[in-house]
Image 1 (cartoon, one colour):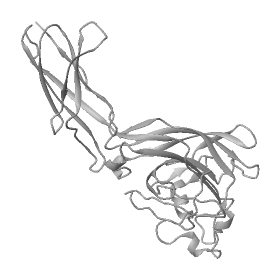
Image 2 (spheres, helix red, strand yellow; image 1 turned 30 degrees about the horizontal axis):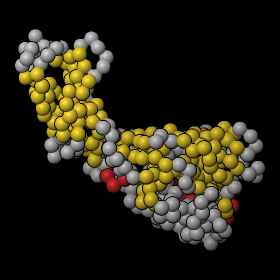
Image 3 (cartoon, one colour; image 1 turned 180 degrees about the vertical axis):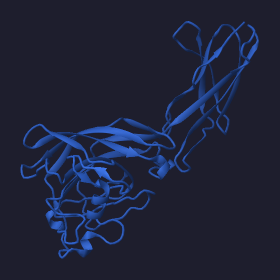
Image 4 (cartoon, helix red, strand yellow; image 1 turned 30 degrees about the vertical axis):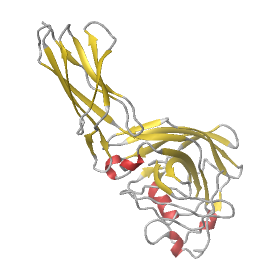
Length: 324
């Protein structure tokens, strides 16, 4: 487990939805980069009612007055929970549009000491992604609900969870695209402590956090349009093919033109299944596309763009041309 000696509670306010960042240290254990949205109520993995994100945010000291402040043992800190993570699996790349909700499935193995009761109703674990340094991340992607774990032995369990992204609510900025995101895992054992109460004892709560579990890339989702005219067209006449390449703008929750990009114009003869590249052109500064070809036979035209460091590939919906 990677550890960083930080020793204080931190707060990250970059996200429009609430983020909680914890760096609670007990001995050699450092807990940092833990981002927990606290906007909605969720159902606990065990089936009981629990506002997962708000609860974790409060126990970690997020947003104004915290349970730690009113606790009679306010100087106490959570103890290092005997939990580690491995076999973390997430998509190699994640394409995110300008709005809506993107749920990314994740699986991981949780290993724990025999004293840790992962079946307890107040035990939670889950994955996250962070960009930048483990101790001081520039951004973090978390899940709305804790992971669901199935024990495979007395000390191991196979777990699954989702990472949740709401690009239209400030979860991402365009600077997050194309950069290396690192996977992490966290676990909390409340051990009967009521995070909603005023007499909570943090020293009875166990927290584990681990980074460097894997990597992925988050890309801006691209879109392509195409229109071939005239329809129908006489054989040998000129066909004008227009279109536009856009990509998600996470700073404005919209799609903007992607300029100076190579895009292939492809054609598939009617009755066949294979596209061939007719020519490659580049988008204008605003993402517009325009080119001409000669009409030969009935078939379908489409534009295709390739994946870049920051942006996904895209395929325009095929447009049929009837050649007379």
